[in-house]
Image (cartoon, rainbow, N blue to C red; front, side, top):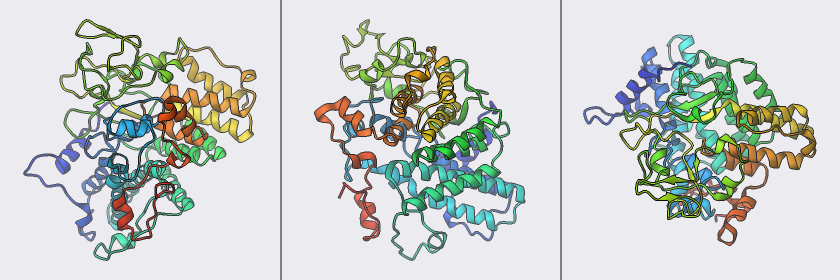
Length: 490
């Protein structure tokens, strides 16, 4: 992957969506398809627009590392993150309902972006631009559409996917129902399979842009969601056969500024920058104001239960800060938590970045890594066969070795239940505060409510239907009887 972070991409986004009052955002839904796109630059503009909602931005980026991002809310619904107010508490206690805009906002804000991608794909298919450019552009648009669709599907279940003919007649009011479950899965799957054929290989993809490896990684996540173990293994093997990705030597350093260039473990990351197009504000979210390397707002903590689940030598808990000496000279830890660590350690994850001169950092937001391919294949092998084998254990030990841990033995995990309990723990330790994947892992294995009750006791408001978030009352009203709320929230 290139170490330059898409200067052209940044310039295009600034041009199209910048804050300069003399520039107006382009609404591609109002452009005459007979004349647009007509050039490579037009295609690039369409594609850049598709990446725009996927970035890290407090207001309108779904992968913001603030309280408005999906990592924040999804990990807050597990033992990884805990909070006492706002969306943190709603997620922590599973107390969300259709009136909580902090929870319903992800669908409300981003589902129309799927429609925008559908229109862009149609325009590009009908255009007269070079076939190679057209094919690549359509692949990126389909991948972006599938990416957003999968993330909303994972959170809310099947969603509305407007047909092209409805989108082309916006003045005709057409209430739409959510797709049937199998239709939703097929819609995402087909987009990703198409994209995987025409996206560039990982060694040719620009940093921060989609690749064949990323499309197949998303297929892995979709197939895990559906417990299609054979398909998970097939996609993992396809990624491994690319002979490009590899585990980074240093887990902790992977989340620092210095190590992110040419890191072949990263399958997809959102580049962060100070230009305002994308931002990473995680230090501001987790560090208390008196933290020695520049403080923040301390709006979220981890849990001591999560911290205690790590083995003593596990390097992956290094940035779960269990003790520090504040700028006030006071030592804060579990015994003296104040209101900083009363729930758990500080979940820093990425480098403190003492050199940052604003609240933001330029450490990129890593969403998917090769380690996920390895652990997903191990899980697929064991569950496909109904019991683990040595190959599955060896794959997990690749991850444990990097974490400075002793290898596990097949004889200790001879049945599928003990194996799945173990791999859930490994996944939580490997991916905490990375795109909120652990929530889906717990749901897949029927442990979501169980873990919430275990950590919150009688305060937990969990129930099996809380596996899905609710839709807003506005969406239900707009649906005029055909858009149905998720069961349990009526």
